[in-house]
Length: 99
Image 1 (cartoon, helix red, strand yellow):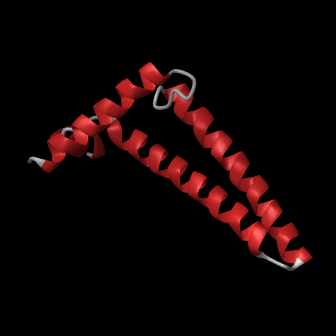
Image 2: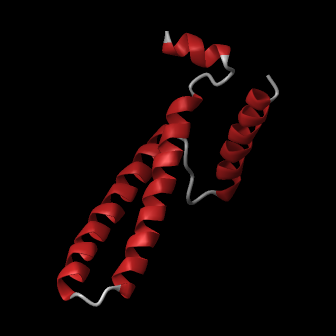
């Protein structure tokens, strides 16, 4: 039923890509926020805990990136291919908003 609803909305298989992209962006945001928090804390114990969280966040980012590359959703080394993916996603979003 999910594929049927995706196709009705004009998204096809895009939902996996949208979820993965959102997850990747959230991981990036978490990395930025954690690094900022590390520089702002005065507690050595808290800095150590945040560094550990940062390590996990970077590892998670790598896993998400690898998944997206394997599915063809993300092309970090090929700006032309990534532009095509981004344009397709933007076009789909625009088409959904016009319905």
